[in-house]
Image (cartoon, rainbow, N blue to C red):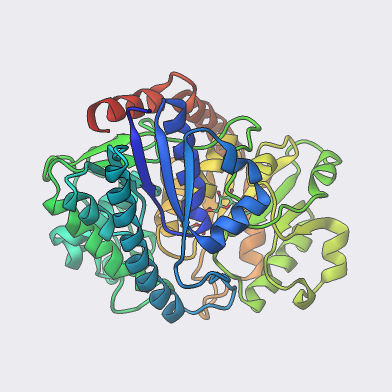
Length: 458
Ligand code: UDX
């Protein structure tokens, strides 16, 4: 029996399941056994698309009912739906996890540690009830953790002040502006996804009752050296970089795809010259409005670059459909790492979800950042101003919140072009690719850090 028996709990969304599975892969390679509870609906989808997940030694995917066995993640769900869903998921998830811990004990195969991702404030409480060690797997950058930590520990007025132009936080080597702050923190002006606020609030307050809380962060030392230490004097909290949790090779055994990958884009990419293609994707959750879709489509056509666009929305509603088909390729879903590591890639037009940002960074692809909410705004700030591997579209160009075609085109031309700024970004992107791979390589610092964590805590 494995010495480290890990219970890994994650929220049922693509952007959470992907890093959780990559994390499970690392743990298993170090001799741990990982149990990963998952909702029945997602279990069916995962297994349908990647049946080998059920045969991986030392990985147990354990399905449970969240009350939505036929699926919840429809494209037209509102925030109120998500709020209702999350509270149901949390109560059922917490009961299920409690029972898992109990039966593992009864079978004399007790868990040695509970690890949990975001939006699950009940997870450390359940662990405490059993005297079980727990730690958080933080799947966003350390900088975002710091901002939230400060916000929930006395800095809310300092941060939640849209009239200030610059916000300084102790330990962070750069200033932030309101548009760099996770959007749901602005309580006076609720943004989409603002229902997550109480979950984060509770999760951060849970840290105060923990002894020496540990946060395992999907980042690496060179990327965020100061942010990893900014809050460590408070409550003996320790942030340990264990990233990037990205597969560098073509190993798809731990793939967490919840949508079928389209089949014909690789051949299309193969036909394109080096560094000539713009890859466009806004992650697994955000849905573009019709007008914004049209502006992006027009910008892509006007600047003349070839593009591969992941569009989960209805394709029938697309304006300029024929023209788009001539110049680019539109797919419903792709294997993003395969695309980003393709030699034809020149730029990633992204919403800056943390997985996408890290995947681009690990692949050495510069970005045009079009952040929408939560951590994405901070991620875009880091991309543009700190790591200097991209430009951010100016969201203030149109007053109605739509970013116009001229602005999108301007950004794409800067990143794809051979001007001084574009060249500098390409050079920096190569540098970060090397540093990311150095951190995540076999026997590298990410592995060493996780190994010590396991030995000492799990
Ligand atoms: C969400 C949040 O929005 C994000 O800000 C947070 O950091 C994590 O959770 P999501 O919006 O889906 O995630 O974005 P992102 O973090 O980029 O994750 C998307 C994942 O889907 C990536 O791992 C990406 O590789 C994958 N993907 C996306 C595909 O495999 N194929 C696609 O066609 C599109």
